[in-house]
Length: 285
Image (cartoon, rainbow, N blue to C red):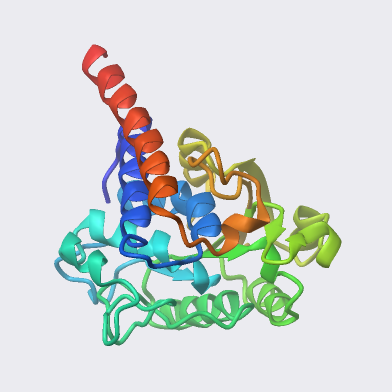
């Protein structure tokens, strides 16, 4: 497990954002909005919290991560590459025929992917099953899962929530990436699942609400999680869809994006400028 300063995590998150855009070069398209909204969470988990070893990705006592909203795979690919699970040039093969980096994560092709996800609403139940198995093996490993607010209407989420509380799976930590948008509009208009925090609490979960694009808040809430607790933890993470690319932020159009060359150049320039500023602040510390 590594511990990084918030500034170093911000830099890592911006580097991951650049990789997310890099995967769309050459006329490709992808689920950018959700990837950019959840990438601060994934960066903090992989670089600061989880007990993992990229050189030994199947170590039995590792922590596990499940990306329930599998269409946000661009974020997971970028963070796995930055963390050293595979060579960065692999990202340039994203969505190519036969690539290890498909539109949704494939555990059979890419180191660090614990489960195939894509069909929404299944990740929490997968995470709970793994967590129960780990406890039966008397391992102290934890299971982290990232859900999207747009997948919460799937009833299987709440079967998983009930199961986790019933079996007292304190080794499960679920982040709900609440960016308020899905492919067809505002989640509140498509199927309103608020109040999300109250729903998880009603199932017997410990619940925290944070700004999911603030790495210090993510670190803070993770520091409060008691790994010996008998209750699972849900973190309601308020985020901005397409966070970091101002022309796309908080738009349903960012859900699946195929950028023109000029749009790509503008987005990359914005992130590089932020990276430069962060680096200057780091040098000045």
